[in-house]
Length: 315
Image 1: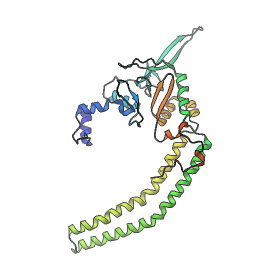
Image 2 (image 1 turned 45 degrees about the horizontal axis):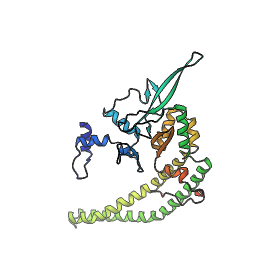
Image 3 (image 1 turned 60 degrees about the vertical axis):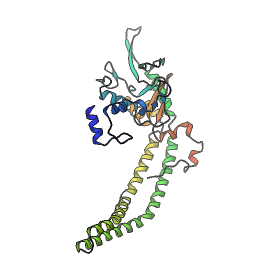
Image 4 (image 1 turned 90 degrees about the horizontal axis):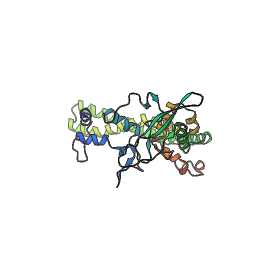
């Protein structure tokens, strides 16, 4: 903990009053589940907040293990040496404690022994008597798929979105290019003015103080226009790339999840949501921004006909 406190000091973390953070304050921050999107209000139980989580449940659990506040698993996401793909990703919807996994062996009439995988709440809450039932792995996979399908779009809809994005990108670039000549003129004028001031300073025509006062204005223009000339197109291209990734990542998402390997399924879950909750054998999630806009309940039936209604402008 001392090393964490030193790092907090190094990067300048301060309290609201501007004072250095005490070690116990840092402990409280790192152990606070509020940052995963849940909160306590008027009762000892956790409730799902409407705000966007700052960190995922998985990251919160890793911090608790790294700090030694909970026993670290020798094999991540495993029980008795077996890999469990959803372990560490879900919280109980009733008590907001972790969902764990276990294996149950069964001897068939044929004499063959088979193992079944189940997920269940750890039921570690001291204030909430959690009665959430265990759920079989296959059943949980289907519940996750159903929840994911609420955010998926078809390839046809994705292609429509790509078309609108390309049109918007081209329009944006044309608009920005209108100002490019102006930025170039301002940039050249600032460079020329600074060259003149440098010459006057070398010839002793103006003092250092006068040079400093007059050059600041031109240096600011030079820095601003240089940045605009160098980054505007790059930022717009990055915006277009990320926007297309947003839609391509949810094309037929349910079917993609069903056909994916275990590791890929974990990545898809983390891509779509920060927090996943299991309650009454059903799955809910807190989607990442701006993926919540794609939920079926947020879609207008005529959204494809009105591309400008929810369009986000490039940087």
